Amino acid sequence: MPTPHEAPENALAQHRAGKLDIAAEMYRQITVQVPQHSDAWHLLGVIAQQKGDLPKSLELIDRAIGIQANVASYYSSRALQTHASPAFRYFDVFR
Image 1 (cartoon, rainbow, N blue to C red):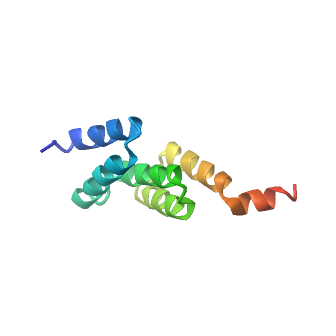
Image 2: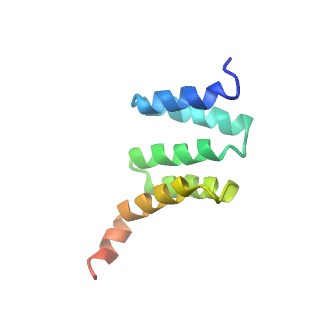
């Protein structure tokens, strides 16, 4: 069984390798063991976006922000998700 330090690294390696389902399951296991693991919540949100589930992506990234609000990359990911939203593109037409 991986140590608490190895588990996030292993999940990230799977994520970087494009094995999104495996990485997502590993991130979920981390959040069960450490519910306040903001990086795992954030990266679950990134995977949701990669799979096209923008509402879920925003929900998960917002959860990460709620746990640790001083991480700039969380806000960057949230901005990218919001910009990718069809609703955002609809309002962008009026600029």
